[in-house]
Image 1 (cartoon, one colour):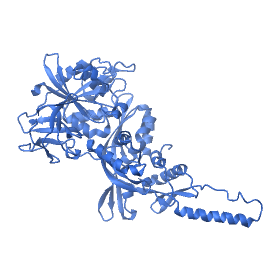
Image 2 (tube, one colour):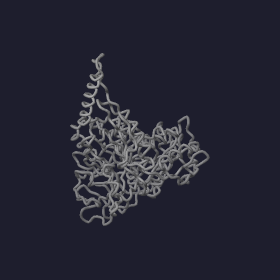
Image 3 (cartoon, one colour):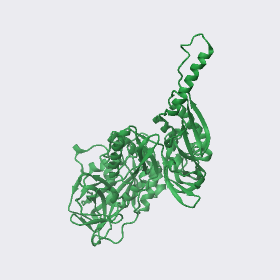
Length: 601
């Protein structure tokens, strides 16, 4: 296949703007999938993806298209994940393309992720083809949205395609424009082989399957290959293309998109963004942009039944085979026994992993409140990173604690500016700038600690703006703040899984709320249970769960008062002994209480 007849493109869009539906229509138009095999959201193979309407795992498909000029073109569509947590994966998928279809909903217009993905595409120097989708909706405003896109990327509004992916209106024009405007690949067909890994998954028979875009040279089935970042060497089990099922071929040439079944047993050896070359006479320099995906959010995951610990470990191992960004290590807690400390790319990634553990592996799990990675500078000058409050050293040894701050952008109708500012300031945010996109919409730039962002910020933003605001965020820097560890003691025992790192100014307020909530949630015992919140040695809030009382005087009627006193004294001694040996079960709802401490601010 000559490079001049290949087109590689991606579809970028905000969540629920019709990306997967448009991909379905393109597959139908090019007759890549037979009608009887067609189903909605064909490239979204996970049940979770279908339910949530979000692409979680990138995929690729090869289509043959006979254009109106009579020529046949090979068009490779590389589908990207559709959430801000997977920005690195999106950037690698875009690096594998020469063009991008920018899909915008005709009733909702440009949103936060739309803009982020446009900037990612412009960084990779891609040809952007804007498309206004859902023009058949009653609330559609295709002309206004086209004008918005003209202001954003400078393409005249009259040249912007207006389509409906659901009903198929204008889809053939999309394919024509891809063939006409997206440049063909420009790699060196005779140079040393270099292929970009833009995604991978694990297959129990073929090992790690790398999704690749060949930039230079040729990859052949009989070549010995190596990955340039991890230095792993392998002989491919199979090489092929996606159509959309895997179809083996003899070789992949410069400009083509396909897969290489490596036979490797762990996905850590074949990471997204790595470069595949030949083991002998390979390329000297890898392709630019590779970095390891770093977890941003950490949580403890424990089985509710301790006998399921080994099943949970096996399930995490299997999930990690398909997701190299998931990291975990064993952890023990006095309250929850054995479990794992798991690192995620963001809150959405954490939600997906939890749901998959419960659904696909039939596990009952308990996740502690998410935390972030803090940098602790000790008085002796050494620095350590911690991702759990339990790892925090004694406060006398700490010089300062630094936490990650994020740059956030919020797109919103201007009527909600006031409530959003209130919310951000409550969450220790700082205003940077506010830009007006048009007469009614604004983009607000803030800086904010990640710890405040991950708990319930997104839900509250959606509720105060009636769902109209959209959010995007990037890591900014680590910043020193007056942070302290808030401990929770139940029956004078510290519960490590309830400890949290908070700002000193918020410690009293959060401690008081947590104690009040735990008082409602912890069941009454035969003895009084004190619940305390403490910073260091100082208790800042306390409440008692009252004891259940047995009326020992019921059988005493009349008679001497000393008889009653004797019975009460005996009961008091029994309660005291019980309190010394009795343990208090902390229910699961108590750990969830940490997530909703600010609900009624």
